[in-house]
Length: 166
Image 1: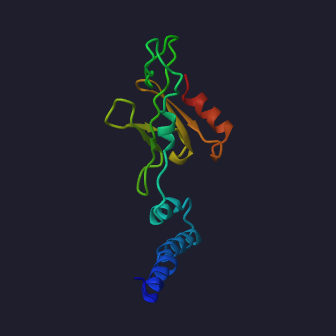
Image 2: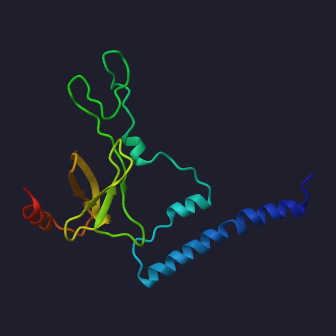
Image 3: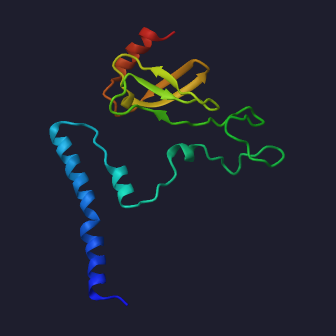
């Protein structure tokens, strides 16, 4: 039997005590932004705090196999395996950018089938946060694309390609 006290405690716990850590987290984030920190992101922490379920990650969605991609026997053709026309669905892996104390001039990618990540040194002026994709052309040959929102200009990329390109 619910008493008025158990109902009151449930309401206090749900509407007053539960949001308190979230408010503290938001206050700390605002304080860090005022101090000059950039790219302060607390959305993931807030989602965990409020118990939001995690959905599929972009890499998982990219690695799903379309239902129509089947071989002559009706089996799904796995990513990385060519079809009858020789077309292969690329295997997508995440880019491992560093944390607070990492080197911003490198990114790491673990190629499909490998266990150790490959370290890719970025050109002058390109930071790990600017990297959009890393395409493994063949072993030891990589193509790095830069995000549209990057501060690296098209002219700078062209200059880098002219300097380091073939």
